[in-house]
Length: 159
Image (tube, rainbow, N blue to C red; front, top):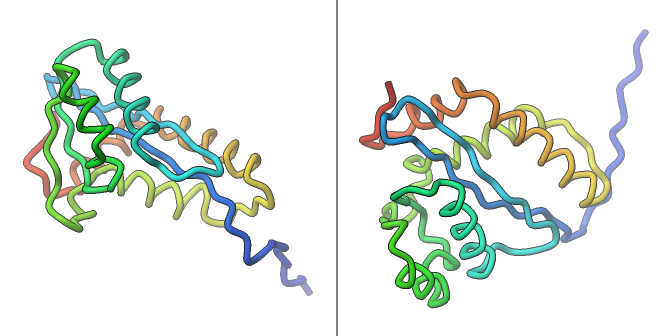
């Protein structure tokens, strides 16, 4: 007879890995790309948001638009000041508490419920490494990235 597996884990700790991401659709609407950055042992705040936006702007090197949720860091004075100083992106907020509209939420959900679901990591460094690895694999799955856009009731549709 088989034995029931035992998964060991630590409880009652407050260590975490925060993440920021963007799903980008090109103007022809025929390609989707996922950009992300992980922040072990940190909350996402205005400095992380502005650094991510600056890097994304450099990567995209073209006019772009941003739809995002109402995270405090997205609405912070530092973030607003950054946006005023830059021609791009033009920004719009999703309605209050509408995660079903945000395609990035589907990406995080897929990661948490699929490759990371039964992954036991006892330390933040290995959790970060596993999350980075699986998110990079997700970057190479355009059919999945497209599905996150299609699943959202947004007006945006891909070819």
